[in-house]
Image (cartoon, rainbow, N blue to C red):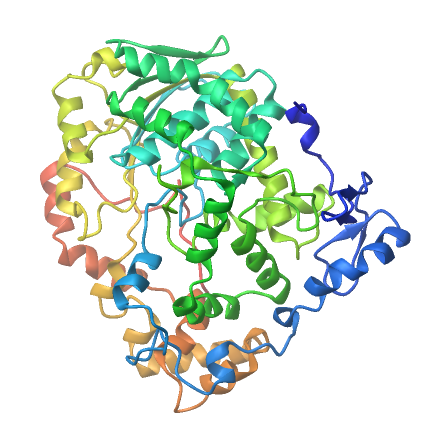
Length: 552
């Protein structure tokens, strides 16, 4: 079996790879293709030798500056606007299934939940955090990695999610990053387990070995269990025994790599969803269209020109035990991280901006290594649960979780509630009533929420519902700042045309539209002022954790 650490590189590899002939250049990619910038080579000889293979990507129609989506080429309304059937045989129910699924990756960039320098400021302070509808680990990784190098306090992080698949993956990721001594190997395994649809067989076997103690302890159902992460950090968990059966079922599932590839292709390239995918292509630069197309095809977080033939085993945590893809058809790990930081990190490792998934690979490698090292240097305790968020709050208040590492009368410095304040989920009032009493009485203690769906319920939430005058002024600002040059020709003409539809210009106006005032109106309509007064809480006047973004 090959050494896991030898299957990765800290520098961009030469793209001279020929899978059919099982050959690849071991050199470093230092000379970018001048046309597409997607790949780099170690020499002119390698570039010339690889052109026959590379030209299909380099000359992909998606690379054209005048590329137009299929509905423009066919002179029809896109299916996401038209009420008519797009001509495919797929039913609305099938399309809906493709557009939905489990949320195993975040759809908002990771945030630092502490921002210590702008809040507590004391590097010796102890901190207790709760991610009560956690989703994946991105906010935890960002928070730990943004702590000062000399942070000397004790940090306790409570993670809860009601979805067994989300909780299982968080347990496994923490286990990999906390128990594998070599941070390079730990980060490499965690990166691909988190985000790649297929894995090398070596990775799959190594992950299975690493999580065996975790499975055994869940099956034993000990009243108290602590998995050490080095000498300073640890993880305790209180999850149903079914979680272990879920993990075993994942490891022992028998669908083949061919089955998984067929299923992934079925979801990612359903004909009925072509307009939706090409709508996304309209919003990104040409090389990123090709990068996204490759990710849709193979599902690997790797540099564009990297050898990938060894990724020959399904990542079974992203499929059901029967081999059904668990997420929607448009999900991408790029949504989970700050793209400016991703690109800057990629460049430090030799990747070009065009190779956005290559940049993401190096960014995640760096971040996960830092996280793994900090688990061994800082004093951090994780407490993982798989409960309904409202029941979880009641259990904490009732002091019923002491055996799982939650001490009586605990209070939190940060409570991150994801988007459960949305009306479709728990709602503002109930979240504040449930979790407000568990917030520490401190000027810096905060409940952090993300409102995902509010704009559809509040006039002015987006520029389209703000009125024609607002839209006209925003379009005028785009022209004054010469921003229309970045808009596809067809859409830029529509922006000044009476034929423009809301969907066609919304994406260009939203980044410069400040909807803070409508958002405050929405909060008042939800009775937020009343429940804040009742719970003796208040809205922050100055945003010191996640600063307010100016659109001036």
